[in-house]
Amino acid sequence: MPISQNRTIKFIYMLLCISMGLVVAVSSASAREEVAFKVVEVTTTGTITGGNIASAREQAISGGLVSAVALASLDLLPTEAQVENFKALNRIIYDQVDTFVRDYKVLTEFVADSQYRVVVQATVMMDRVREQLSISGVILTEKAMPGILIFMAEQKLDDTEPTYWWGANLVYAVPSSEVAMADALREKGFTIVTHGNLDEPLDYDLNLSIGDAVTIGRHLTADIVVVGVSNVQKASNVMGGTIRSYKGYVAVKAYDTETGKEIALVKRAAVAAGEDAGRTGREALANAGVLTGEELSKQILTARQKAASIVPNVEIVVIGTGDLKNFVKFRKMLGTIPGVSGINIKEIKPNESTITVDYEDSGDALAEALMLKTYASFGIDIYEVTAERLGIELIPE
Image (cartoon, rainbow, N blue to C red):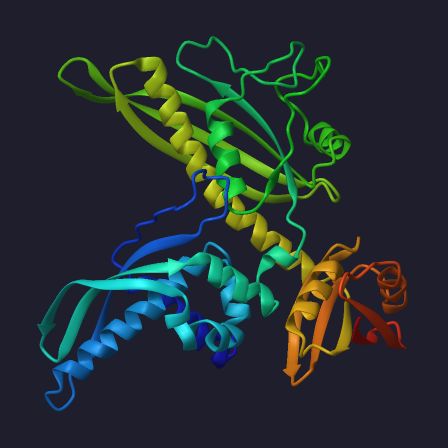
């Protein structure tokens, strides 16, 4: 591994390790909406030099704010993407953290030898982080997020056998683990393909083959199918003779419907306690479903990034980017073209930017697709076209 990349990984690892805890607060009314802010708690230190305690305190707080923003941004960019875009992230995020921190407070502080240690609680404005990453071409939302179809066979406490929706009978009740998993995936930006509107049963066996799951997924226009099982069991913990704990288990695999290849494997378990066995069992399944969905989203994003890295690139030099709104609109329109799986900023100059596009075809084909698009506040002049490169000028109307 190159030394520079190794240092980058160590720095990000340090940002994560210095955190003593992570508390998340969502301002939106529904978990399906985008998170507006996160409340993050981190522990950081500053070095006392020459007896200057005030300077060490300021250093510790400053480092805490950087760490808080870095931790919060992991929801938008997984660790692998942060490593890949570390230089850009330093410039657009970490060097101006005050822009993304709504407020903060020092929860506690103390001196240990020559170190001034503080616990900082910061409210990170996720909408601003998301906007900045989007404008800079780093965030993954410029890539079309995949649609996911979930095949979950769930067995609750009183079930003699698992319930599943692809069998001989129409099943309208969605498993608790699936509902929770789907919500966790939606929160990360994924689309969930519904299966609850079938007119007649599919009549497949419980042990659905991967080939059949992929075929059904393609038919329902899903990009990824998730196939799994879940069940709940009594745990050994009892309190007061009436409150019992139950443990939910979820195991899933994810497959790309285009290639049929496995791209993720997740197994998670979670516990819930209560007097009502049925309700508590469903809660345990839901808890395990949330954990599964969160890990599944990370593995799917990582797999897509690896797949995108082997897609041919077309370089586009764009003139007229001084009008930032037009440039953002152009990139968003570019992201809607079939075959475009990623857009990355390569270089930014005054009124000119160079971007690379992960595109399944040649630059000629991309130019033709761009000519068919309608742009609200500007037009485009494609002045250079080759298989690997385009030159485009944005012309205000």
